[in-house]
Image (cartoon, rainbow, N blue to C red; front, top):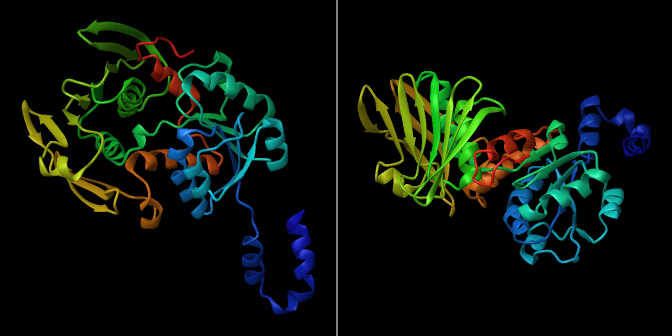
Length: 349
């Protein structure tokens, strides 16, 4: 409707504008998709810089926040330029007509709150790390989970190593005490790049750690050892070589040459990584290394201004927000719940 009114307004001036001028003028009036937040606690404070960057990029607008108490984290409110606050969920949906709803509540409250949102909203729903969900939700293509660890810069770099074929065909992947259960399972399974189902899941307790093992339909072994401790590394084992190491790149682990280790032909050697850090958060602008005769490089896909206020985990979260603004889900609920099966608390569904 607004576009039509705009054309009526500029119609008398058509003779003074070229076609390209008119299209440029109209495009400036285009409204970004609206995002509404459900939840107002510490999770909102973490996501506020992420959402602020998305707003600055012009891909969405944070329209409103719903909380039962009507209270929202003050730092988040200031950074998001004080969006409207509602204590009535239906009213927020009706008055703002969002394209995306971001649910930021505790894992224990996640199912109940998400269910209420799904009753009154038909757009994209992003949830921050639920542990369980009704089985029928896994069939939905509009529910995603904001799991940031697989999208850390170094994790994206390692998946490029895998895709280049340097390791050969992947046979085993593992979170070897590097991350807590859910994050570790998601990162390890991402190396193998297969969707959803595991054929079986076995659980054993070794000392204070739990060791879960699953087999994909293609025969890839996925090990998840948690909680954090022991060797503390991520592992990808192929038919030609294996790669193990950290998941976050820092100045310290580059200087100590313990960031990544390549095991090939019965020998282990550190991978010498090059990078350049930017800003107070020491964000990597690129990651480059020669591995197995291949030059592998990951480059930052956002502007310097965009990442100046983000850490590497928030960058991973931003990837989900940007995809949702395009109408896509980066990490479907079904995949997340399959990965959660590799956790001590049992099936996610």
